[in-house]
Length: 369
Length: 264
Image (cartoon, rainbow over all chains, first blue to last red; front, side, top):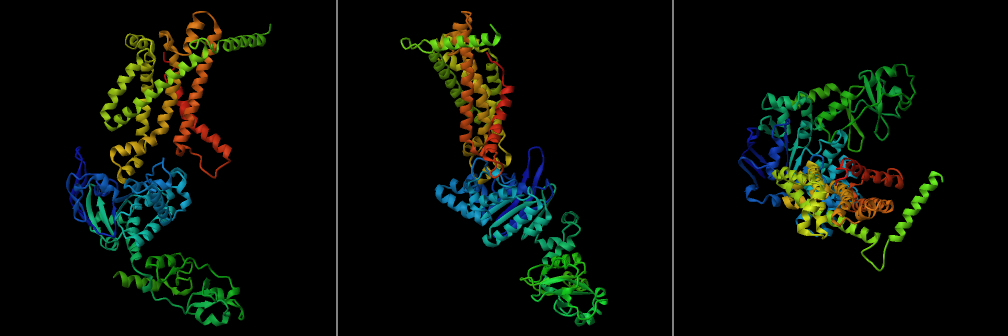
């Protein structure tokens, strides 16, 4: 547990970087500090490992005032990931990762063996260990940065805008990787970002900072999107927060209908009576993988005896997984579907049923009430 | 006699003189070879002492920032003093020993190297320095284990400039009876209106400078293998090597161009 007790940072020129911060970071959770530039989020983060000394107030880790600890020793027990990775250019990838264990006196051979394990943990080929950092892509460098921070197995991990210098696709991959790692490792992570989407995606708790170094709101991501404390937070989380909030509701609550789902070995006359009542039918193969949509009108001129598999269908777009996806994914799938309907599948990709926009609307209404 | 034939003839004369005067087994102090050895001794000792002074001073200047401006001004003033004057000023104290040449030349090396050491250390990317702090490197350990190695390419680039300048300047010390190959140029050549020793002296100084530079390039390759930007998997080995050499040479050539020309 990390506690800020009235922690403040005033610079001699009168600038207030952090004003009177009271906040508790729970053990084993990911806490995200988010805010625009100049809101003191990085300064607050750096108070935790004494890279910034508060001018007033106290920071404690598990009750111990960090001013009682030697800075260098304190830092060796706290993992740190920096923007642009901050890898040492003159050391190989493996020795970069082994940095803190070597500082702590671990024999070189053991430290390197541990480094190789960590490379696998963060999804890097250990064969890359002998390369120099500049021979890696930005995303790979950042993975090395994460591995280096984890090398001495510190209980606390500080991450200072670690993914903001990589392109969006790589960033999403790194975020997924971090979520997976955190599931496994349960570190106390403090993560700084200016990107509210990243904060919502990664955080168990989110602290929103406003310019002037004040804490505007400290809440769960869901509460933050549902109930912003003031206009600043509301503006910062964005005006599409309603849609974004749907990420927190499971798609399981939707009632799927399978009476409009037909296997493609059926004949046209078998489905005509349904098409009379429903504008879109979903065709699946015998394994129940989706094939495509059939509109009621496209069936009108088709003679009887033709199988559904012989007809041209409209692409089904992308599906959502009923067990694991959120309402946001279901809504997205419906919006992007040419038929205006979302296809729900199980984890093996077999169609469970479809959900119309009306059904979706009813579900959204009931859960967000 | 045609011009090319005359030139060839002249070159033959120089060569013959060099061959005849290379070494006198009976008089170990006479001839070209002892001068070359003396030249190497004086220049290498100066460069080494200059380097040994520049690195700790540069580290100190980075650690205690207010130190740098007065120190740089101080050594720059020394650099402005003509070397001949310094040699003569030192004569009463060091006599005709090697130190009369080495002390001023080491100071000149220091003047060229100090800004390189400081700039090299300043050039360490901020995120690298901060990462080192956050990993738990203390100030001294950070300087020695992270910042100095990262600054090494810039320091070696400065060393290349300084060494070429120093090797050339040793010749001037011939005015006080030292000066290695400079003595061929001054005593044997200039005073006796005889061009063979001048040519031999100049050629050997240039060759020595080139050889030293090549040694430093080799040292750079061995000490900073990470600084070679030749990524694997792109192009043939030969092309990569050529690119790496070009990259390694470019900064030194650029800084040679701006180096103080012909200090003397």
